[in-house]
Length: 224
Image 1 (cartoon, rainbow, N blue to C red):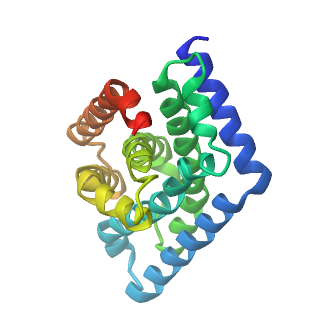
Image 2 (image 1 turned 90 degrees about the vertical axis):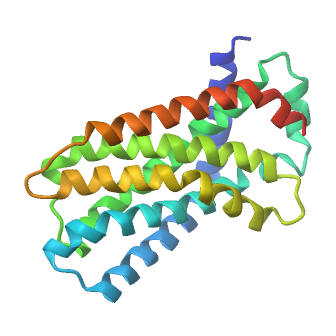
């Protein structure tokens, strides 16, 4: 079986599992919605302040969402030792990671898109004029979040303090992604709007580097 087809099978399995229960998506959406609402009442920002501070708060909320959603990526495989069965299958080991990365990317992006209207209303920010640019930034930032989060979820899955280990591993690595995504979002929300190619290039480079690294060490990650 080709790597692409195997990754698609893993992706389909992850989507069926999640949409059958909807526990992870529902819990994460409610949690992040509460965070955004609390931030809005705490800061009570004006329109100008929203354009300055809103993107940082938005991406901080997305980081919380990622911390919740990425943790169970490999924990689901433990009860029936499904991961061992997948490793024995005649497929490229990276296809397992790729399928889970794709699933995490779609879950996170869905939560982000559902939260955007709430963010626009609570923070008095017009996002419709810059929606295509904003979705591009969301996609690039979410690829970095899903890639690193899935890899570190595989690393921490067997650890005794995995709930604490994953955030500790993620935060230092994701700091550049959060900074670049926040700066790019600030650029398109300010007046006049400006899409920074520097930050887009940085996000694209980060995604390519970590996807390549995951492809190179994927087999060793799953063995451990």
